[in-house]
Length: 189
Image 1 (cartoon, rainbow, N blue to C red):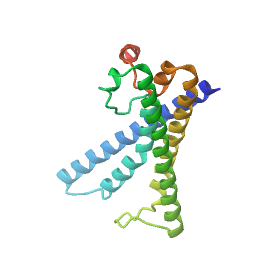
Image 2 (spheres, rainbow, N blue to C red):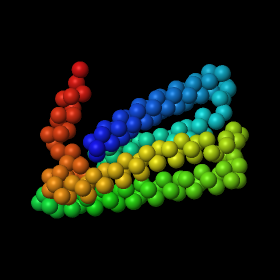
Image 3 (cartoon, rainbow, N blue to C red):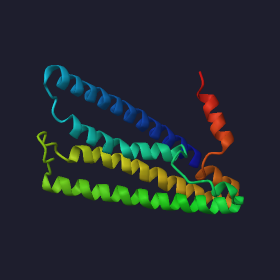
Image 4 (cartoon, rainbow, N blue to C red):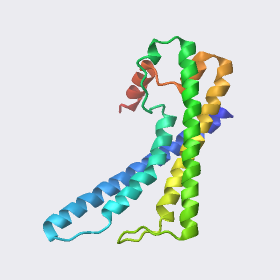
């Protein structure tokens, strides 16, 4: 059962990361068009910077979820690798639980922000006057996915405690050197 949920979340986060990549590509093209039009035609598209901010905020939660699912989040593991397996497992479990708490907090606060914007009918104080519920909804969806992934992985790490330190480290720890090598080899055409 947990493996099926893991596979579903892995597919969902991968899709989110792909869509986020396309959003960044679209933003890059819009910025290039803005620069070219300003330079060549003395004309501005107006609002590319504002939309760019919304895009970056909107995709952040999807990127967080994908990074966490791939165990690719930044760690300072110089000392971690020198510790015994039980010490690594303890710190990895603690990190997973703290990550879940922070992710849930972020999603709850994003929901409160969206709720307040909807109550007030908030608009951006910019020439576009974007209804703030639009980018905030995308932001909330991404952060909610991040929270779901973080809670699931923390739960899985807690369950893995009963299987031993190796299982905890495989779920909540950074990838091993061999796992990174295998991942690189599998990406080759």
